[in-house]
Image (cartoon, rainbow, N blue to C red; front, side):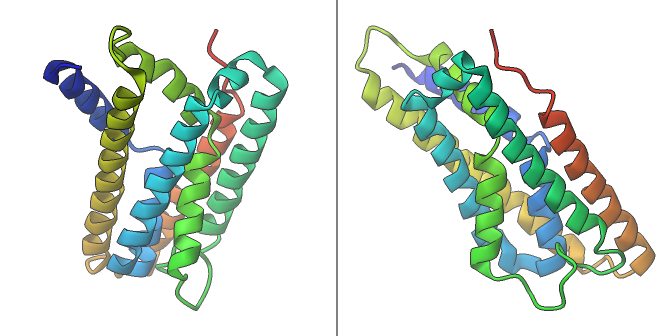
Length: 207
């Protein structure tokens, strides 16, 4: 693999990751509620979720999802239901500056688990890797080293992206003290998560 191919993959991945989606919304909402302590567990959870999706894709699950409408639909409903569940909880937080309507801070394990599930339980992640990675594969070179490099690159970028979003939101947290504004942020974020869940229900396997 030449440097230009790797750079093109890294650039394309960075652009795709920085676009806000369900994972970014969850990371930001937790960071606004829990502060900087959420950055590391959320970033690790996102990276592990992407690792699970990439591993499953390389193992053939992504191809199976493309071929099996029933399996794709089942995973799609599970992922969508979880996004809607998180969105409703955030929406109900009201004017509290929390990622969840709770008085006690969320544990690192809980934050990591939420980030992992939202990232991994997305059928688009599986089909995305199946459709995205082959475009950069050099079929004349050994496959395993290329896949290892691409996966490591994507996971580092995914971790850095989530970590950066979390730190930025945590920094902004200190400037957000108006309960009315917090309520708007929570309800907007919750609505977007619910919307993302509903949008996931419209996903179709790529032909």
